[in-house]
Length: 179
Image: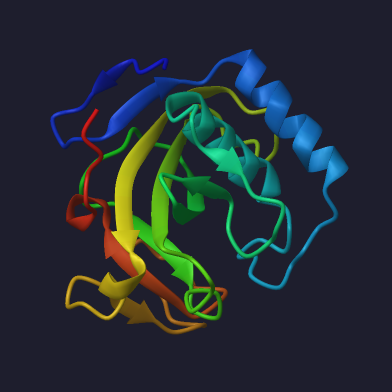
């Protein structure tokens, strides 16, 4: 396990290596684009794969699934990884997004990962510093008061217009892994 540190917020911080980037690129090239649940019409697949590779590096006992319904089996649970590229290191006020159409899938736990990119390339050529495993949300928690629904077309406080209706939760409200 290659954990750089546990941050004061309880996030698992991992250095992004060229090896992780190369694995994500290989997976991206080998996988057809599925835009059904994509916020970026498939252009974010690289970040999704990078987040999955980061998770696998930390939790080496997790097994990749052979289904699009979830990403891993880990300790008997079906795990869906939700990764997001960001221009800042992970902090508690960050929103984690989950496409509303997808949340009723056959998943036990949603894991949110933040990828810190030092440049804004929007592709695999970016300068990636660290990835952060922010924590997780169990499926039965999706209807809790800490999760809120943001409608497609609505504008967020940061000026971004939502491309899809999604469920959001603050990174600080996720359950943290104990490592």
